[in-house]
Image 1: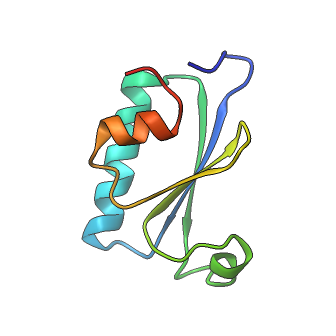
Image 2: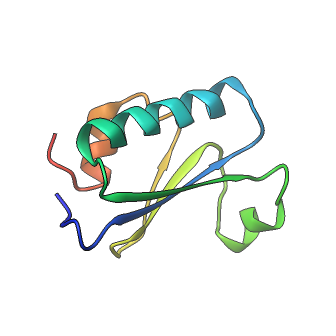
Length: 94
């Protein structure tokens, strides 16, 4: 798990309040609360409000979770319902 001094930086790209976007937000909140409390910075970006960011950040599907720190960048596409897959991609021991 990451040390408290080096939080994970996560950005969740969504498109409005679609069922998959809402599920991704809830799943991310649950996973981070259970496994990474106090060790993660989360930003939620609604691409309906800021569509230019999709191209700038190479987002090709939504919802997409991007771990930008620590490098290398990791991307997870989907509603984040597979907790083990999310933890593996974020390099957190489950």
